[in-house]
Image 1 (cartoon, one colour):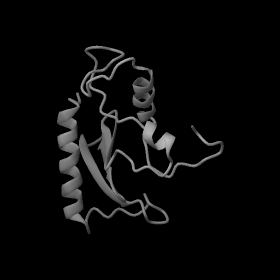
Image 2 (cartoon, rainbow, N blue to C red; image 1 turned 135 degrees about the vertical axis):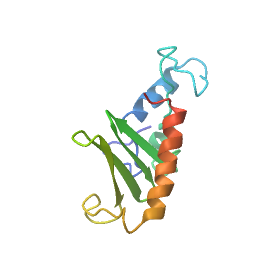
Image 3 (cartoon, rainbow, N blue to C red; image 1 turned 135 degrees about the horizontal axis):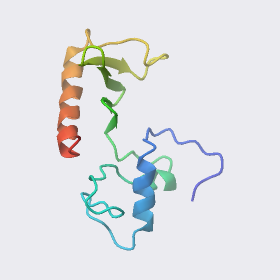
Image 4 (cartoon, rainbow, N blue to C red; image 1 turned 60 degrees about the vertical axis):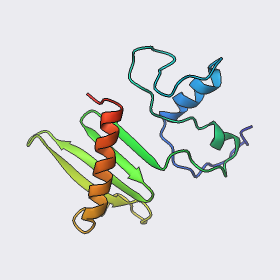
Length: 135
């Protein structure tokens, strides 16, 4: 049951609602790699949000969140978010690292002072990109 005017503090992606709706509408469980609506379509990599809708205090099923749009992407783990922004004039990817716990989280770029975190998040992004077969 959803409580009126309740606030969920667990970070989620809008796209995860699709996984929640599909799971709640499916007559039988679907394998994680199978898209139950469009067979042959790319794998749905989200997890259902039903547990946090039912209980706002429930832990998120996502330790890591991935985002991708056009040639840009981002990956978030904990308070850190690495953003890859494609620069069309140069054909290069610009990386910036942000601490989301800061009062203005995407203002300061921490990439040069936290190269190890950049390396870790970049490795997570590359692995995810291969897993979902991004093209």
